[in-house]
Length: 163
Image 1 (cartoon, one colour):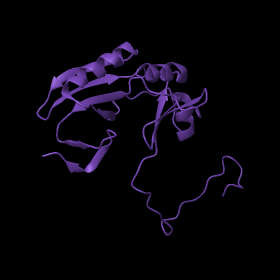
Image 2: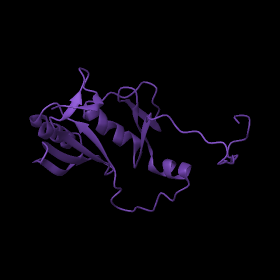
Image 3: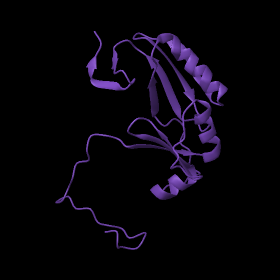
């Protein structure tokens, strides 16, 4: 397949299917300015991967990556018109805070980095949560619920809940 010219379209057959493994490897965000967005995430305290480039910036999230690419480039690659904005995307990234007190502190850091608070730290039925938007409007929830099981490296243990 790799010997075909760029742009060659391959046919998919329902007779030869393959399920993807149950994992994500990259979260790709289309942004207005890769440099501006990268600076925002660096101001949050995240470290840019040394394998990033000016047009494609990666942040290691512990076995998967948050990647930034120009919105127009992402739209073109996927075959969409980048000028068409549809409003609420129905999508958010979630960071689980280590404590309820950390939710408002993380939201404050997002503002200091150039983001904006969408919903302040608020007591919920399950804990404390709030939302911020990055400079391109991508939604992040910062959530603390004592039910989430996290390992010593602050990674989610998906198949466990705290009692």
